[in-house]
Image (tube, rainbow, N blue to C red):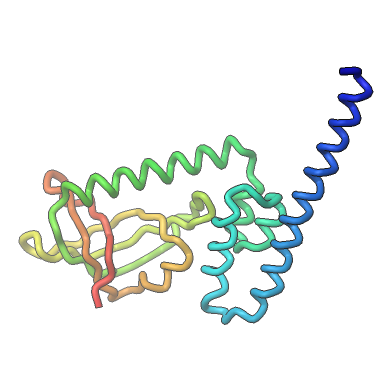
Length: 180
C-alpha cells in the first residue's frame, strides 16, 4: 500500500470518527435539553445517571456539562489524579465491605454531620457523629464516609441507620441502611 493510500484511509477514518463523536455529543445535548423539565429534587440524580451511563463515550467536557460541579471538577482533573481518587474510594469501599461482613450489628443515630472538605470522584466526604446502640451501653463515636449527592438528604441529625462496628475496635463504625 502506498503512503498516499494510507494517508487517505487515515483521513477517511478520522472523518468517520468525527461523525461518531459529533453524534454522541448531539445526543448528550438533546438529553440535556430534555432534562430542563426534570424537578429540581431529581435533577442531580438524573444528571449523575447520564454521566455514569456515558462511561467514557462522551467527550469529558460534554459529560461535565451534564453533571454537578463536583463531578465536573473531577472529570477535569488529570487522569492520574482521577485514578488516585478512584483507588481511594475503592479502599474505603473495601473497608466498609469488610465491616459489613464481619462487624457486629448496631443501630446508629446521627448526632452531627460536617463536610471534611475532601471530594473523591465527585462525591463529598463527611465526618459523621453517631450514637451507637446495641453493643452494650450506648456510646458516641464518629466516622468518615463518602456520601453520594443523591443520598445526602437521608443523612440528617436524628436519622437512624443500621450500622456495624468492629468488635475489636468499637470506634470503627459503618453506616449502612436508613431505618424508617
